[in-house]
Every structure is written in C-alpha cells, then in structure tokens.
Amino acid sequence: MSHSYEYPRPSVTVDCVLFGLDADRLQVLLIRRKSAPFKDRWALPGGFVDEGETLEDAARRELAEETGLSDIFLEQLYSFGDPGRDPRGWTISVAYYGLVSMRHHAPVAASDASEAVWKDATSVRRLAFDHDKILGVALERLRGKVRYRPIGFELLPRKFTLSQLQRLYEVILERTLDKRNFRKKLLAMDLLVELDEKQRDVSHRAARLYRFDQRKYQRLEKAGFNFEL
Amino acid sequence: MSHSYEYPRPSVTVDCVLFGLDADRLQVLLIRRKSAPFKDRWALPGGFVDEGETLEDAARRELAEETGLSDIFLEQLYSFGDPGRDPRGWTISVAYYGLVSMRHHAPVAASDASEAVWKDATSVRRLAFDHDKILGVALERLRGKVRYRPIGFELLPRKFTLSQLQRLYEVILERTLDKRNFRKKLLAMDLLVELDEKQRDVSHRAARLYRFDQRKYQRLEKAGFNFEL
DNA sequence: CCAAAAGTGTTTCACTTACACCCATGA
DNA sequence: TCATGGGTGTAAGTGAAACACTTTTGG
Image (cartoon, rainbow over all chains, first blue to last red; front, side):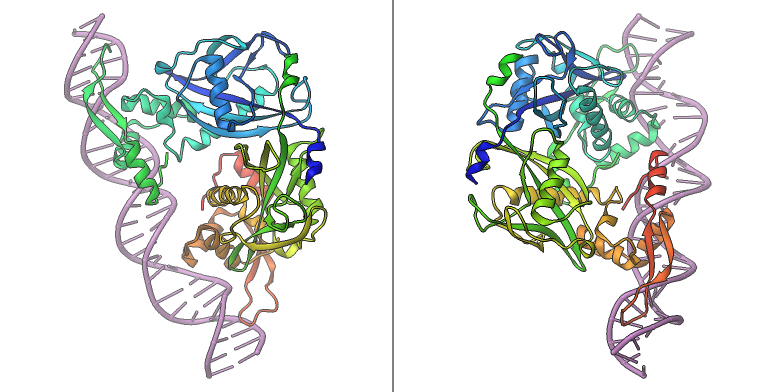
C-alpha cells in the first residue's frame, strides 16, 4: 500500500497519570507547563513519542525527563484522539497510568515542567488539554482494577501495616471497610508475608509489618487463583 | 510549543477485532488483504485514521468500508506501537473490539479487502502485521469483561433462549456451566424479559425466548448494581 | 415411541457480614 | 494515666455448587 505515505499524519504523544497515596488522600502527579499552549497551567506529564521507541518506553522517558521518576508500575490506559483536543493541531495521545509509593518517589521538575507536585486526585480540575478527562478515565480504571488485581500494593512502601493497606482500599473505593473482616480476608489469601519487624516512631502500639509476596501471587494467578477485593 | 511540528510523525491506523458466535465456536471477522504488504494474507479490518474524525469513528468507517458492517457494539481495546510492527514504517495502531450477532451481520468484502469472512477466533494464526497479538489481547479482554459486564448479549440475536445464552458463556469462558444454577442466577438478576414467544423450527421441545432489558440494566448500574458471571 | 433439548428444587457448604472489647505504646 | 491505634472471634445470613428426573415436541 504505497499510497499510505500520502496520508496526513497526526502528532502522537504519551501522557502519564501517576497516582500516589498520602495517608488519606489519593494524589496525582502534575507538572506546571513551561510553555504554550496552556503555559503555566497544570498538566499530566507527557510529551511526543520518538520513532524507534515503544509507547511504554516513551511514557517512561517523558516521566523521567519531566519529574525525575523512574522504575515504576505503568500500564496503558486509553488513547485519546478527538479532533480539537490539542490547539496545536491534530494530536493523538496514548495515556498511561501508574502507581508509586510517594515515600520512595519524590518528584523533581525538569524539562518542559517548571514544577512537579502531588495534588489531590479527586479534586483537581481545569488541567491543560483534555487532561481532566484522562484523569477521570484513570480514576475509573484504578477503582475498577484495584478490586480484582493486587496493584494497590504499588502505592505502599515495600513494608506496610494491615491498617495502611486497609486505608488504601478505603481511600480508593471511597467507602469504609470492617477491620476484622478485611484482615481475615487478606490473610486468608496467604499472599502477605508477616515480617519480624514492627512499625517505628508511632506514638501508640506499633503494628506488625507485612510485605506482598509477588512471586507467590504470580504462581497462583497462573493456576487460576483470583484476587478479589 | 511551536517546535512540536518539527517532530517526525507516525502513521496512525485503527484495527477492529469483531467477534461473532457460531453455535459452539467463537468467531472473528477477517479480511484478505488486496495489496502489499501482506498481500493475500488474512488480517483484521482496519486502516488509516483521517484528520477530523474521532478514533472510534475511524474504526466504524473502516469496518463499514471493508466489510459492510455498521451499527455495532465497539470499544477501544489497546494501542500498539512497537517499532517494526509495520514494514511500511512507523505506524501506531489503535485497536477496537466489537461484538455482533452473526445472524444479523453478514459481511461483504469491499475496498482494500478481497474477502471478508468469519474464522474460528481461537485457532487462526499467522495474520498480517502484529494482528495475532492484537487478537490475543482482544480475546483476553473479552473473557475478562464478559464476566462482569453484560456485553455477551451483543453476540446473540435480540431474542434468545437461556440455553443459547449459557452456551455463549461456555464458549467464551471455555468451561461448562450447570444449567439449573445458570438459569437461577440470571433470572434472579431480573434483567431478562420473558417473551410470549417460543423458538421455531427445532425438532425438539421449543424453548422460551427472552430479551435483555438494556434500559433496566443501565438504571440498576447507576444505582450500584453489579452484573457478575 | 424415540431422540433431543427444555425445564424445574433442594440440600450442603463456604463465604460474607455484623459486631465490641482488651492490648501495647509513647507522650 | 490517657489517648491512639493494634489486634482478635463468633454467630447469623446469604449465595454458590452439586445434583436427576419429568416434560414437550418433531420425526
């Protein structure tokens, strides 16, 4: 199909919706745009895809360039191509979403970003481009996926308490959970490794620390096991 | 960001994975390519996105052009952009998947397609481009989604029997289901409308026909109802 | 009357839910 | 000693799974 090259081509970008968890709020990483369009407005980190790289590599590269963050859980979210979504012209964006432990990932602005900060994910509005919409889709996906895939652990430090884990689900799902039932259910899955270690520097009884057994989960998953709530 | 226009741009295509159900096999609609690359090979229907149309519109347009099918359930699946996936050069494809009742949608080849036919979805191989991979992702998505969203009905005629519905799930999920439990569960959801009509032209006891109550489902869904298996 | 699929209930078991008090620690 | 969250068990109810025979219809 040699005439294919005659087709006009869109620009293609990647945008990243990176979620973090701040005690009792779901956060999203935003950058302040250095240049037009939407100069000085808050936006999702992202940028143009280069030839010769995968879409996911592009997302990781842009994220690293603009916020300094690397080595994180990232998944493709959705592609946005409605006409008019970018005032510069025809632009299709492939969005990714990711989860990080805020404690281990402090953003540093660079490149096209004059600032890179965590903002409350459920209340930010009036972002650049159609990023409000992208964020909305990402929130929906996160709420859906967290219930049947153990991705929530990515939001916590490697060692965490059961209360932290419970708060995580309460924040994302926006409802309270029963403490005893929650612990019973999660421990029954036998995917948490009880560590010989306790919380430190808290002014109350220190909680036991756990870690998620990723390997075991992968084995069980292949055997048909289903993580649920 | 005026320098954005200096970036090299990829071609962007859409590809459609259209599923149908044939008594006891899951089918996928394929076209035979009229021209290079992959001339005469089986491929998913699809083509280049035009400026000024949405990605979904592009998918519907290409599907209509190449197979004559229109007015069907379509959802965005995933975007594929690995370098080298298209021998013509840098090309990103936004894939969609859809479900149709084969009885109501007979394909007719046209445009870039010299044939358009239904093939067994779980056994076709060696499709053009990376379409084997796209089909694999679509199958995975279908199996996942059919269990918690009532999209399976799109594969059936508007009026169907409970046995047809059960076979649908058995085919997609690749396991047998208990007849009594299946009927009990689905009828308990109260989303099927029992019609005053029966199956015709069968050489055994005629089954009662039902239809899916889309409106009611949408109301219940908003109220937090959750379709499950 | 035979073949083929339609249609129908009950019991068992596992899982979910609701619920309240004592414990350990640091300030 | 007080405030703060950590940690624990049981009973009741709900939903899932297992299971076999009778009915209807056309050939």
